[in-house]
Amino acid sequence: MYIAIHTITLIILVLANGGRHDWAYNFGALLLCMHAVPVTAELIKNRARIHRLGPKFWIFAVILPWTAFSVLFACSLFNPSFLTIYNNLFSPLLPIEYNSSLPTTPNPARSLLFLEFTIGLLFMTLSVLITKTTRRQIRACLSGLLIFGSFLAMTGALVKLTGSQQFLWAIEFREPVAFATFFYKNHWAYFALLIASIGIALIQYNHNSERSSGHIPEKSIAYALCTVVVLVSIPLAQARGATLASIPLALVFIYVVTRWLPSRIPRIATAITFVVLGGIGTWFMSQMVAPQFAHALERSEKQIENYKAKDFKSVKRIALYRDSWIMFKEKPIWGWGVGSFIHIHPIYAGPEFYKNDSDYPVAYEFAHSDYLQTLAEKGIVGSTLLVLPFALLGIFLSAKARWKNPISPSLLLGSGLVLLTAAIDFSLSSPAIAMGTVLLLALGVRYALLSRRTENKTQSS
Image (tube, rainbow, N blue to C red; front, side, top):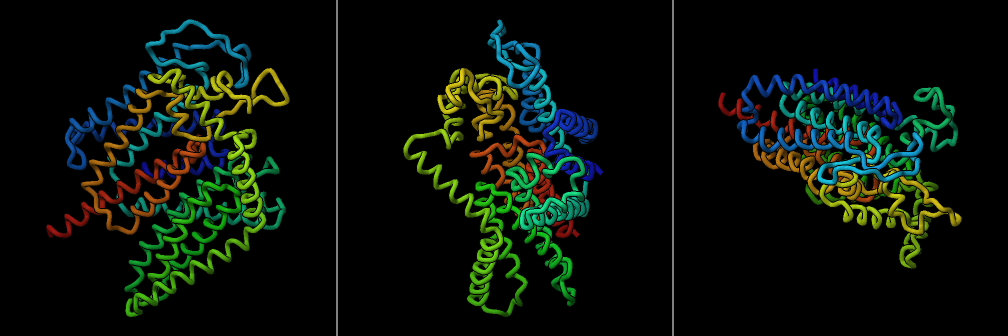
């Protein structure tokens, strides 16, 4: 039941412009934070002995760091470092006195939105990992997400390839642009990476179950067709980072399809088939998305030339990296506050951001590198308290999981690719992408844990 709620929440965030609205942040945070009740009940019921890990691990490695993070940065809401002259994101700032030994923020209202949702993601992670569920429930929710993502991908592909927006009636009733800054933009491409990994996972599971049935693997074929549509939608979104990240997924997809060949065929024939299918797929995709690909290539070549000439006006992301590092070095311990980048960056903005000799720089909401922005906003202490429990959970739970299953590796590959792109883009700044990435990571680990438990029961019987 809890995983179904997570799935519905993710779908709602995707439809709500990726969650980039104040009400969506609050709504998502409320639904996710409600899982504190079953998480706490499960910990108390089992006396914090879950997945053969004792209470010391759950208390000291997970609960205390995340509690400290939540409390400390909640205190920052009452420790503002600046006063906004106007009540908007682009308001000039007046510095005020504050306690520099504690976390701070220039805008408590904005920090509250991001902090609430981040805490909700932490409860969601624990909910997926420790509350009762089954592998069947996980597969059902993954199937729902694949169907949902495939429908959006087909609708958007029709819009892109035909140049007509008449198809948007199915998903957008109010605006002529689908999902504004989410659908078929950069963030859509990252969401498509996650959906494609789900498709590959379900293809492998259903092929394993249908292989011995003796009839046509209709479910595997249906999942494969959906996955192809989602993969094609990624370059159509003109997201260069996500397009590069989709190459490993496409290769894995082709490899999985070649496994449908009879086992008596020699390996060399299978390898040749893999190469031929890869070549045909590459040619087909390049022809379908030729205008978008040509535009992205031209833009990349121009940015490379300007970068070599040290002209960052058209490569502002490099300048944002530089300014973010300066911001981090100014406040390395606690950072500037959750969600503070758009307010603080103008103070450190380089000449590239001053348009037409303006007295004020153009404001950027995100640093185009989620990791640099996390350091700048949360500092070393906040980033460590937030990220370290994830690392410890991955290390300790992976040793107790069975990874030779058809679901987990694909989910971890898709979410891992999105995490890689976050180093050069602001993919995780969208609530839908952040939630989807963390959800698939947690589901992949939980499915592997359930697979190990099932294997142990089978061996004991």
